[in-house]
Image: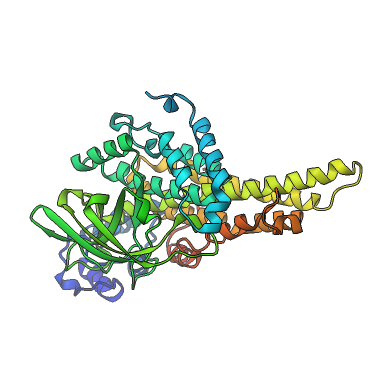
Length: 84
Length: 390
């Protein structure tokens, strides 16, 4: 999952550094991700994992790092599977 | 407790508004700092009301401060805007500086000495996009140094301290910012741009080359991204809206006085402009509801950093700014149509030229186009709250 997230970050994150230089727990906003780019990433992740972020998760914390994004996405993919 | 703090905030603000009103036309005509009004704010100790009681303040909430912005705004929009901008800076200190010994001590000083705080977020080459910086703070040992081409520092020359944004260090990307407090003895300002504008002439928002050196502990301990999202943007939109409501409500008061004077002269015949006054009253109520709803939303969210950083909250605050800044122009234009040539002329009890010119700044202070662009981006993922009262 993190590989996919990294791929999407590389494409849409608009980071001034290469995404493989960003650690899993590094703050993406500090690394240069703008709020515009963060929305583009959310959209790309929704499409790639066929999920929809509820408003309660649409905050800085959920998208602060690769770890945080993976945790947010895992929670949603998990609950979608449980509902099936 | 001194005399002034033993009276209600409204009484104290009322006295400031009277002083502001007496000098408003002169401040506007000369494009000068509303010195008398700001001295009155300090005399009434209104510059520290937001600070916690333990640090010499009065624990005032944002709604109380917005009410004062509106009261002073009814007399002199420029003085009210200075008051609003000071409290926007103070909100960053109160929300994000409370755990830092230096900033707590500084808040105590603001209370004791009634210091006036200014802001330097705009920069040459960046424009109004305050979430980006070119300049970087240089920290060596226990000292920090900063040089910034600040194209706008409202009342910079008259402030006792400036809260200024920059990149966090020389290698930081443009969005990795910090905010630092510099007191007057720690910086120099060299004027680069003169503030000669259509309205809001008294804010004296000249441009300066800022050069400062201070102890490094004066850098606020939180990233500016958090400060912007959790205190600065929301308090800006809400306190500015308070000022704008003040301008609009005074315009409608003048229009109503005009209509009532005509009605008294010829009872029985509906005066011209009466229907427009009803329309203006309706728009004013919408404006008030908009601002009050925003203040309630802020008060409910303020203890919860996650809610303050949420998209729903950002969309709501953006909408409040757009709504207030656009509606006041329609309202004041209505008032002008009602008062006719007496509203268009300067120096009559119904003059509205200053109101209209001041109000035109509202759409430009953080450009509405930029805000709509931001909201439109957020709406790609954020879903509308479909409840009426929740």
